[in-house]
Length: 343
Ligand SMILES: Nc1nc2c(ncn2[C@@H]2O[C@H](COP(=O)(O)OP(=O)(O)OP(=O)(O)O)[C@@H](O)[C@H]2O)c(=O)[nH]1
Ligand SMILES: [Mg+2]
Image 1 (cartoon, rainbow, N blue to C red):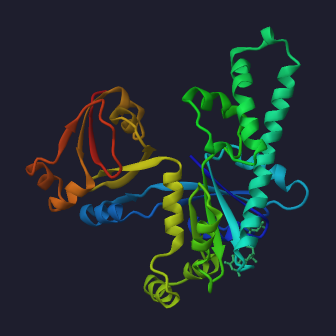
Image 2 (image 1 turned 90 degrees about the horizontal axis):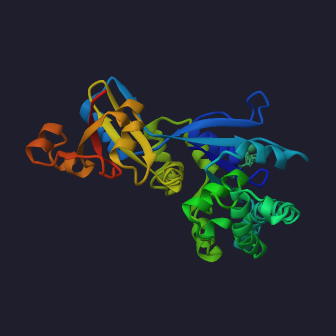
């Protein structure tokens, strides 16, 4: 699981990366590609830590990748380093202009680049296949001859591939292409400090089918150096309720279709990241493969039930809210789970 940060030069990518991950990006030994982990802000998790006072605290994390590349080979470096990213965070410069049309143009400029890049891949592939005799095609290639013309049509119209519907099989067979526009995208508009509402205007006018979040990276970068009370005071003075970087991290997390469940004890409170829709044994495998193989039952209480039963497991049990779930149970976001297994 990884999110790649993309954007035109000097749009604020590295600044945002540093705010979210606390990892310096811009001047680390001239490295082209920098990876960092961002902690997902979660009030539920914080409450569990307060209740259990564990020796160890392990919140959910999202890995981000920032690419520092300039010059002619910049695009190659970006492509190479982000080919494995599951989702894209597209940073748009909204601070050097207050004209929404200009902001839309700079958003489109990179999007068009990505669409074009995907189109070239599709056309090369189709061209290669037309030169092969039909009978010489392997099953993978025949699948491609069926799907790729549809992709070409979409890209030709300047539209991203993520708007098309694919079957699970099609997605698997397309994976090796590492298309840009098939991956989920979150747009981050980096606004000037006196123009925080630009993101709302942009969202309304651009009519995008992907989520848009506004942030003023400059303000939030300054925040990072302050003590917590000073941060709150500073935010209030700027008219901001909550730092936007937390919302961006949370949105990135859901962009990848991930949810979290918790394991709680005196030794550790931990948030485990799993794909939404995972059944209990699959979810258990996040902790240990043996938990999946030897899965017997999961003792589950939802976070809301836990809280309403006095925030203790004993309380939840006494109220009959601690459920014993089997192999078919689909784990829900915020579940507090103890697995029973046999190895
Ligand atoms: N006014 C203003 N300037 C900003 C803001 N965010 C970033 N900048 C400036 O924009 C410049 C680029 O910031 P970076 O975070 O390095 O941008 P980048 O996208 O990583 O740049 P490259 O990696 O060189 O493409 C810096 O000089 C920042 O000071 C902002 O919110 N407001
Ligand atoms: Mg940079």
